[in-house]
Each structure stands twice: as C-alpha cells, then as structure tokens.
Image (spheres, rainbow, N blue to C red):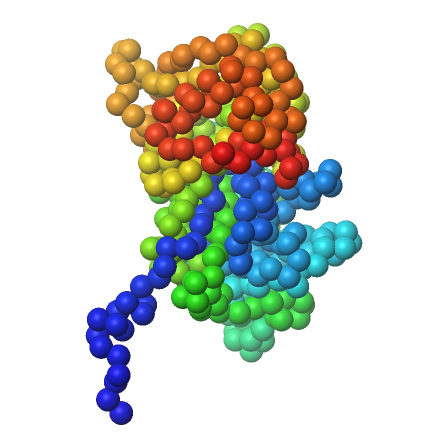
Length: 454
Ligand code: GDP
Ligand code: IMO
Ligand code: MG
C-alpha cells in the first residue's frame, strides 16, 4: 500500500510538543523539590522520576501531615494519577517495599504507580561496596564522598559495565535471572572480599539465596512493570502534560556538579531524555528550585558555609533547627550556609530554567543581616569569572558578599508578594536579578498551602 503521509508530515508526527515540565534542584539537594512537585502535579497528567534512587528524600506536608518519599514520585499523593519510576532510576526493592507499605498504612492510594522494567536493581552487594569504598577513602588521604550508603554509585557502575547488572524486568524472568546470578555471585564475592578491611567479615553471595530473594521482589513488583518510555512518549504525543521530578540536584550531577563530591546520575534537566526515554525537546518548562539559603550533606566544599566564627556557627545551628535541616534519608545534620548566587546562577543557566521556586523564606525571619554571595575570589585575590563545576577548585575560592537588611516578621501566612515585608521582597529581587530568571513560586512554610504563586 502506498503511504498517504508525506515525509514532511511524517517528520512533524514524531516531533513532541514542548508541554512537559521538569522540576530540578539548583543547589546540593533538599531544596524543597518534593513540595513543588506535589503542588504542580495537580496541573499535570502524570509525574515521573528519571534519576537517582533511595538517596533522595522528598518531604511533602499536606494539611499538617508529613510524608517522606525516596523512590516513589512525589505526585503519588494525587490518587490514581500515573506516578512513574523511570528507567534512569536505581531501585532498591526492599526500600520500595517499605515505602509502599508505609503509604498503604496511611491509606494512600498507590494505584497510579508504574515502574520501568529497565530500571536497575540495587543489590545487597551494591550497598556493601558503597560502605566499603567510603571506609577505604576515610582510611586514606582523601575525604570520603559522604554518600548515603544506599548503593547508588556501585549500582550505576554496574549499569555501565553491564555484565554484572540486574534490571527490574529480570526479576520476572526466573531462568534468565538464575543464570545471571550464577555468574555474578562468585564475582561479587571475590571482588568485595578483596576490599574488605583486615579483620572484616567478607560476605559470600550464593546464587540460590539471591534468586529466592529476587523472585520475591518479582512477585511483589511484577504487576507494576512496564515499558515506561513508550508510555510517557505516548502521553506526550497525545498532548498530555508530564511532570519530571528531579532527584538530588544540579551541583550533585555526575557531569556538571562539584565532582567528585557528587552523586552518580544526571540530576540536571539533561537527565530527563535518557532517564525517562522521552525526546528532550518535550520539556518546555524547567522550574529551578532554590532554598533561600544553602545546605549540603556529605563531603565537598561549600564556600558560604556558616563555620568561620562562633557567631556564624550559632546562626547556622539556629537555621538548621528552624528549617529542620536533618537528612530525610539518613537523618544527618545538613551543613548550612548563606545563599550562594554564583552557584545558583550557574545551575540555572545549565538547566535553562524558565522559572524559579524560592523555598524556606520563612526560616530567615529574624536574621538581622542577610548575606548573599554574589562573587568568588580565587587564590591571590583574583575574581573568579564564574562557577567551575570542580570540587578541588571550589575548595580554593572565597565567597564575596553583599549584605541586605533582614526581616523580623513571620511570613508564613503570606499568600501574595505584597504581603511580604519590603526587606523580604528586596531579597527576592536580588535573586531574580542575579539569576536572570523570573520567580514563579515563593514558599513560606512546608505545607502545600504556604505558597505564594507569582
Ligand atoms: P527535596 O529533597 O528537595 O524534596 O527537599 P527535602 O524534602 O529533603 O527538604 C526540604 C525540607 O523543607 C522538608 O522538610 C520540607 O518539608 C521543608 N520545606 C519545604 N518548603 C518549605 C518552606 O517554605 N518553609 C519551611 N519552613 N520548610 C519547607
Ligand atoms: P534529594 O533528592 C542531599 C549527596 C550525599 C553525598 C553525595 C553522594 O533529597 O535532594 P550518593 O549516596 O548519592 O552516592 O551520595 O550526594 N546526596 C544528596 N544530598 N539531597 C539529596 O537528594 C541527595 N542525594 C545525594 O549526601 O554527599
Ligand atoms: Mg531531600
């Protein structure tokens, strides 16, 4: 049969509309992405994670009730809406089980959950290796990465090396899975044995034991598995709006972050294409989430960290308490610092953000002088031209500040910009002008309602 579609029409037929939105963190994580994703899911037809794993911890507060999600997209709280764990995510099935059970116990409808059959499985040896590598670094002359020890790096490494990887779809192919495990287990036993510290107990991985564990995971998760790339592309081509939820953050991106103090995935918007299996051009809107100050968990330099004087350390501790700055995943206290606009400007430019969400503004109420880093000086006092995504470089720069008058009023009840004190608006103006991107949301409290839409 001759085709009735001209080549021009055929080409137009595969071009996506740019109706998808991505939400990405512009600092070192924990900017409040979960809250913004939950809020924006209302106006989208599906939500999808494209990177990371249980290293992420996204908190959502709805009518005073707090939820913490690690692997399941933050849109899950909108009953029945597709909530996709894309192929670029690494899944620890035990964590996923726990997370699902916790949601069910609280009456959350998780029927929207869909899991990519190509997402990689975090196996017990990945977590063991993560732990051993961190210990190895700590005993040597290098600062450990400060990972979450969730097996993220070793799992992504296996994905790239291929021969020793297991994907979610393999969990429901028992014969194939068994053959893979028979090959992988002796290799992992030997490899981990060789890096286990003196006196430590090396683990022996038995294919039979692992096959039983994995087939249990297959029974539990088999019904959620799909070719999520095909599903999301179908939605995009049908004009549906998909929301992509970034995990971790731009400065932790494996290519564009402060390497080596980063995670192992593409956290910035560039990860959406490979991590969800959609054309990158589908994403027309990119919301960059920025905390009104800086936090970081784990190793690596942080030029604005509040640690130089006793007064700074006290203020840092106060902000940590007020902002509940303790890891959602590991409970570790987060390092706290002034807002770093050199870093945020870099991240916004890299992601091509179309709008900003400025979070946790309420936490800064009562700080007499708000310092904002607007430049760096390199060794010898030379002004740095911009931000270099390199951990070693970053450890040698000195932050340059402008000081703004703080605000003392409680802003948590403000629902319009005009209800904010002038000093808070001046702070937001500085962010907008320095980053060169409009602010779309200002968050003044953890609850979904405590949001100013600009
Ligand atoms: P994510 O990883 O980017 O999703 O962020 P986390 O959930 O790890 O950390 C953000 C924390 O700030 C959570 O405890 C949120 O409930 C909380 N939060 C979000 N927005 C606001 C806000 O505007 N004010 C306050 N006080 N807390 C907020
Ligand atoms: P969300 O999505 C904050 C940090 C870890 C560590 C480094 C590498 O909640 O913003 P990994 O376990 O990924 O190998 O650790 O990255 N890290 C995060 N910090 N928020 C996160 O996620 C993070 N995900 C990873 O603390 O320094
Ligand atoms: Mg978090």
